[in-house]
Amino acid sequence: MNQFKDLILENPTIYSILKFVLIVASVLLVVQFLRRFLRKNICDTTARYKSQKAIEFIGYVLLVILSFSYFTGNIKDLTLAIGLFSAGIAFALQELILSIAGSIYIYVVNVYKPGDRIEINGIKGDVIDVDSMYTTMMEIGQWVSSDNYSGRIVKLSNAFVFKGPIYNYSQNFPFIWDEFNLPIKYGSNVELAKSLVIDIASKALSEYTVNSRTKWKEVVNKYYIEDAQVEPTLAISLTDNWIQFNLRYIVDYKKRRFTKNELQDSIRKAFEATKGQVVFASTTIELVKIPDLKVDINK
Image (cartoon, rainbow, N blue to C red):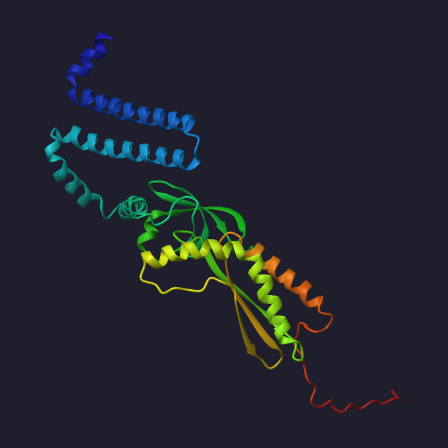
């Protein structure tokens, strides 16, 4: 023990390093203790997640401040030290710096948060975590049709918030517009078909229509944007083969596939119940001339 003390006294650098390691370890232990305490005592998932992230962020900031002040010897030199340090490693660690800056930007500006459905850098999915370096997403799409989970978890650098557009499906307005086409055979009762489609859509989407109308008013008041119709609308166009109905409607961003299936199945049953008054069309081919066939029965 005495030899260890003598070694420390004879080598102040070693003593300084050990002291710094103890300070860092103490801060990290306090951060972990607070995280566990919050995890056990906060029931609300959102509040628990945000509080743990806040403690983690404060801990990192505190470590940076303590490091600079410890080695410079004076807190007043902190600004100069940070400037010199940043200038020296900016090029080598530019991706890392952008990621950290991106995480701060995401939290401050509220670009997106866990639970949002976003598309960034060509990747679409639900955000399940945002830390100081990466955004973690549960991927949707790719080889899976419509807005279904593919099963892959994607970690994306936070630096991408500065490199391209970010599409948010749920922030401020958690609804999207969707549409599909219905081919109606010429000669069908078009007026009956129109009334059936609108009636089915209005009933099936009434809850979305009411909820989205309130949300859309908030968006209009917040941004420079014109008002839009949230009720189901039907547009008709004439093609060479059929009368095309285009049904446009608003739906919860997480229930797009389910809602489209319910609407199309209900419309199919309603058309079948008309007993031939409304019939779906299919692609038709008209044969203008049948080519001459030569048959030799002797062969």
